[in-house]
Every structure is written in structure tokens, then in C-alpha cells.
Length: 297
Image 1 (cartoon, rainbow, N blue to C red):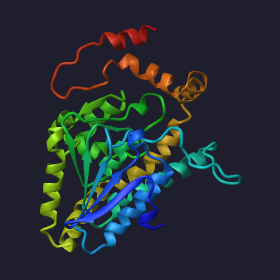
Image 2 (image 1 turned 135 degrees about the vertical axis):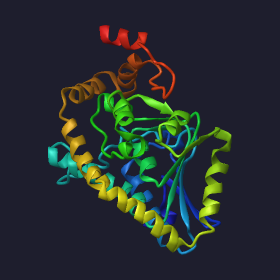
Image 3 (image 1 turned 120 degrees about the horizontal axis):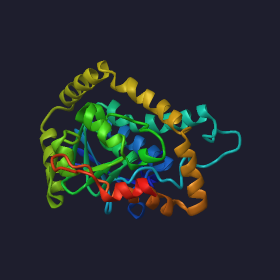
Image 4 (image 1 turned 30 degrees about the vertical axis):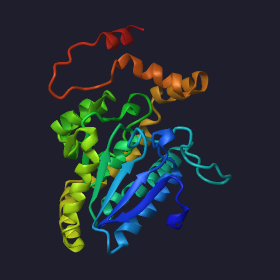
């Protein structure tokens, strides 16, 4: 693959940084196998470019990334190839996507996720695999797919925000704003949306002052510390755990609902009982009439 062949991303190198832009704005940059393949290629291209000190990962249009494109899961079906229908096929396909995302972790140069709009489901996998996440204060960050579609196939949440907040968000599929994500440590910092690009570029300016070999040494020792705490082993287990969760009755019912009612209506019915779907870091939440009504349906 050559950079000229990219269809789902844009790639540019300037002032000591590589900017990788997810470029499916009409789909809120939902991920497809093609997008992940291109992203992995671009990441290793940036890592091998001696002029690049850091990578900025961002999204075009209204969102950073809304997750996986549910109309393109598994990619093109080819006779004699894995389809995801068996348990092992499911794990294999999850691991293929995870390997591509893991390039953000394994590459030597630091990466910054520039998060605005929706950063949901698989979009959080991309953001949290980056070394630093800076978000717009009104961004929406969460994994609503955990309500009906399985478990998280990548899971660095606990390493960012600790076990209680990881459980609070994963067990409900609720989201947090960028501002609250910063309060609980899920992201480094949240800034007004109109200041987001300048904030990210300012950090990349500082990285550009540092020898890339030193950046690599200091990134990798921190990541090695996380690996000693089991971070990468957990990612492998997360893929297998997601495949296990796909066998839950609720996931099978979700599939039947999509076939009967369509994807949009199924997601509306899933999310409507959760009200606005936000967890609050500091404000009291109390009991929600929407949630209570949903339980009584």
C-alpha cells in the first residue's frame, strides 16, 4: 500500500509531526477494515520517517470516531475465509482489528488523540491506544455498545481512570463529556472545542524540540511499566472476552431486532431508556425517570 492509495484517511507530514485524519465524515469516521488497514500503514510510515517526532490522530467532520461501521463488520465475505460465525472466527477477526490499533502503542514515536464530537465504542479503542488524549470539553466519550453488543474488545480504561470509573461506564454503556473525562483521568485535558486544535498542535510543537530517540526511550519505558502491570496481556484477553460476550442472550436478541426493525430503530430503542446517556463526575445523578420507565416497559 502507498500513501497515495489511502481512501479512508488523510496523511500529511509538517513541522516535525505526522497528522493522520480519519476521513469518513459522512459516517462520523466509523471504522471499516479498510480504514484500520490504512491507519496501521500510515502509523508505521510515520514511525519510520526521521523527520517525524510525533503523530496527531484526529477526525474530519463532526466527530473523532463513532466506532465500528456496523454495516461493514468483518469486511468483504470471501468463500473459504473466516466469517465470524464460529467462536474462533470471532476471536480471529477481533484480534486482526486489535493488531492494527495496537500499532499506536507499539510504534516508537508518541501519539496524541485530538478528540472532538463523538468518540464512541471502537473510537475509544483508538483514542486510548494513543499516548496522550486531549479532548474538547463538549466531546462525548463512551461505549454504549456494551449495553447489547458484547464486551470491550480493547480495554485500557482501568489504566486511565481506575477500576470504579471503568466499571461505572462499562457496566451501563453511559458516556462522559470531555470535561468530565479529564476530571476522572480518562483523558489528559479538556479544552473548549475552538481551542482544541491549538492545544494539540502546541504539544506537538514541544515534542518537535526533542530528539525522536529520546521521545521513544521515554515513551517506551512508560509503556513497558504498563505492560508489567498486564496492560497488553489484558488487550489480548479483552478480544477473547468480547467473543465470549457475543454469545450472551442479549446480543443474539440485538441481532434479531436489527433484522426486524433495522439498525437505527434498534439503537434508538436500546439507548432511549438511558435518557441523555451521560454519567456525571461530580453532580448528583439520583434516579432517572427515563431509566425507571425503561425498566417498566
